[in-house]
Image (cartoon, rainbow, N blue to C red; front, side, top):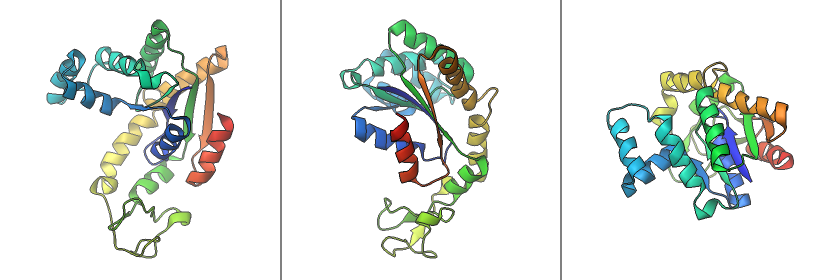
Length: 224
């Protein structure tokens, strides 16, 4: 099962992706990780990507997409994969779609987690990290995992915040890109949604990201 995953920062996309990865034993393909792997291995594509990254420029699609396809062709992807973090705009979606078809790789399912922008922002800024165990979930804006004041709801340890979680301008910038339905990430998601409607060649699943992790997980599994 080959799955393409969309969702704004704060929607729980990473959590749900990890659940799918474990449940179906399929690798999680993420563009940033692919860049790092190719650069560390000294591949030709990695060298080309590094030249752009070192200058602070975006890596062109002509380099990124071949890297992604190469990753999909590796043995651990034979039973499926989960792609996250790409495409980020409609043009990339078109190029990815064309490249997949040319390579004979079928996209089976597209998952979109739908979440109100303000709620997504609150969830990011509401995260609190337990000083004893970062895996203890605490968020001041989510009732099910709301901490006990400034103490971890699980173990009672002190809580802290991550600097990037409190950078409102950076969060807004990321969300500006994602929620742009004309030129941003949602536009790429809707490109595949249109394909699903017109051709039925893939399944497009929308999930309400408002409930808790378990509820979203149950809806996701039931729709796959």
